[in-house]
Length: 389
Ligand code: SF4
Image (cartoon, rainbow, N blue to C red; front, side, top):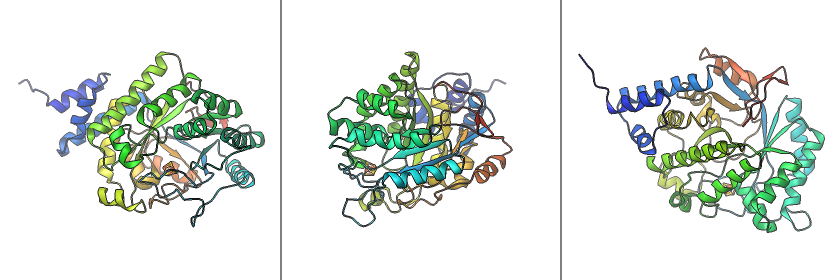
């Protein structure tokens, strides 16, 4: 007897055959509540992960440096920012930053991830760009081999605004100073109605896309992120993923750099400012929602962006490990310190030892492999393969 596949199975079969699903089809997957349908989505994401990225799960040895938490903006999810005269405000000097970099090198880091608040006094000779360039140069001069993954599209726009420069001029100067790639943070949800509530002073969606594409055009790879699980709808989540996919396809088709990975950042609200926390109505992410979204992200984006990473800071190591069976192929970095989400009340911790990450990966019976920022393979501290992004 001929069995007719359910609409969900039909979508999943098309994805398994290599087709890109539409945003509306992604929404249909996100709206599934039946346990059998959700299990089929997970299994499809896992199979696509296997086809697109293999069995190996990668990790990076890196260190976060958030050089200041003084910020002119007031994002409604942010527990990290401070006014300059507020308790807990800090601004690291060059010596403190170099000490952290030295510690990272001593612990075999290959990457420093550097981002900070938007501090209007962070200037040299009354200009912002030389301050940021000096930050980069001081680390690169001391440790030329470290990859600097630094300054979000929002920080690029801030520098450009302060110094009356174009985005391209800012990115080119940062690149020349030694920045190797741009974090795709500040994307939150690329929908201006959502942004008006959660980050009203931030760059709008189009500006985020323009800055990331400018980086790609100038040969600077980026990552991509989404902050999920607050006020956004499944349609807005899929629009966000749709914009990332088009951006990646556009950049790659023109021979530019591209997006090296997609990272899901579920909203942690425990210490976030009260209005948004009350509106969302919970302190910690719902793991099941994050897992389903990661699976759909794999199914929807995997042909264009093959590397997918959960956030152990936000989901805890157990949640992040489970994500590796819902479409993810990378467990992220050691971080060594984490302030932004921890100050929001995240339970995942601020630092992971390499052994802890490797054990989590190996508990699934999958091989663990150190990588560099751009997914080149690393063995005994040596970069074995370079990956073009
Ligand atoms: S998320 Fe970033 S830009 Fe927004 S308030 Fe916090 S530090 Fe400032």
